[in-house]
Length: 278
Image (cartoon, rainbow, N blue to C red; front, top):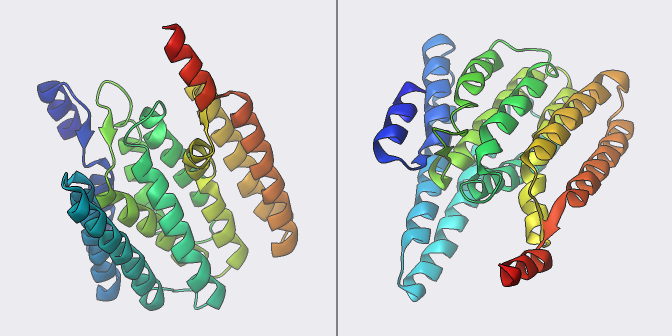
């Protein structure tokens, strides 16, 4: 946290590397306290390297090389996440092998997308709320408590004046680590894994709405919706001990959250009109 602040004061610009700093800190403590299997550490390392390939590919300026590099880099991320899933599923449930890569790729890409845009500052607080929601949902919290400690501290780093940003190098491995810790803590209760993953909530919802031309531009509303959604979604797991019923209720919560965000969002057409007026 202090290092991010000093760099931001020296450069007077947003500081990259927030996600990889979070992940590295959590992995180091996990390694020192719990000695996870080597496959876990190697798998996370490959995901980080694949994310780095995305950052490099998107930095290239020569279009033919850039397009080919991006395709290969995204393919490498998918392969790294799928490989990590096949060797690192502590629950042993087949459905986890299917859902885990989807969660990591969707939420990881969303975390990466927050490096720009009006809601970039909210990434840290949103992730901190998500981590807190997972922590109160899963039955075994020994390892996940490490992520709670890191999340509360680094959750403030994306806010002004530091304005730390996450790039692909850390975005996908961060989500993979948090999602894996959710599996490890919820392996004795499958429903808690689902409850933990849906706690990501608004984090992927905002960029998905952006792809549809709607950009939620009130940060207080975005964060408020995420807090309320996370509380309700995690409580669903405790109220209904049934996966079908919980999924239906969570789906309704997602729909309501999306409607609220759209209500307080601005469309691309409105933005163009405002730009013409200015």
